[in-house]
Image (cartoon, rainbow over all chains, first blue to last red; front, side):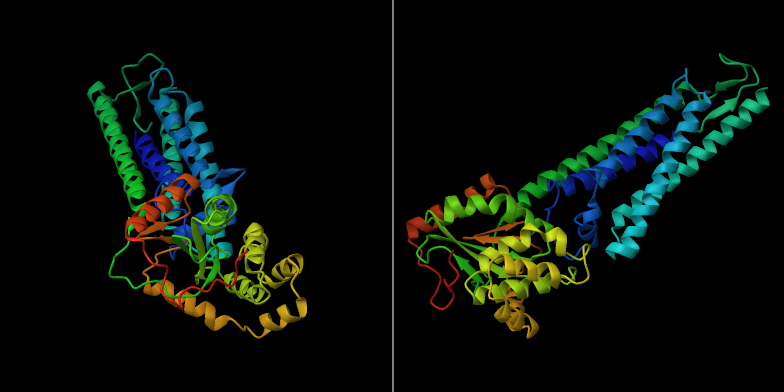
Length: 142
Length: 261
């Protein structure tokens, strides 16, 4: 449940950044804000999509898996928990790469991107904890 | 997900069942729905507020724009469009490549408006000053606008992320637009127009320009790059507002129509 709530929060954060990138929130403008510097840099897009839109897809994926894991049919299935750990691990790696770019290449820190990175780390931690709980429960049951 | 427990009583799967009460699950979905609702309302409010703030009425107590800048179009055009722009700003490049061609052919060349570009190189863009200096040097040879277009068209090749030495690319653009390279290089090396660019940037500060690109069209301020339809409406509104009063063109000495294309 905690994973779903955090993923929902992350989803709206990345939606906000995507809408900004598309010029629908605020303006696609260059001010003194470092978020703008990062968003409008050449690394603001990845494989033809805004990085923030990848964030939207990531959080939707995590949310879907988290809700799937709540369903009676899947609640004890380790596949869902393992998928969550895998997906959030990928998210952590991607966030780490983006943070490295901000610090050492773009030389600007987008605070919303940092919040998203922290949410991703939190999701990874919760997913690992969830998988461990499930594994222990299964072991005890056996 | 973190609610699975061993149920000593057994369950639908041997040994592992959910212990979460149905009421608890319901509360969770209510909470999730509330988070979603708050998110939707917040984003909707931001979008609506952004649309409302994009074209705003200028504070009438602000002084008239006095910076010379670079002008395209007829001095007798009823509307003046002033753009404060930074050559390294992607939003400015977006406007220059997507909207400005229409503005030129449908508003400037038809005599409905004239366009004034005012330098606003931002500190966050390390290579932008070189581009502004190059455009000013091109202006010496009557080629500001071709240089302006060339600089914006390949912004990603000379910006801060692309290189630490933008001169290579920008000098190539100068050659491409047909500048006398001897005069151009001398102008660039001496930073001949630095004071002019700084004066233009100071004008932006006087006008409370928050970011680039920003446009002043009549009594309105347009914040950010906008599409053709929105832009045309702003010009039409300015023309309508100016028409009954037969507003005089800007005061003598404030318009330098030396760089018409």
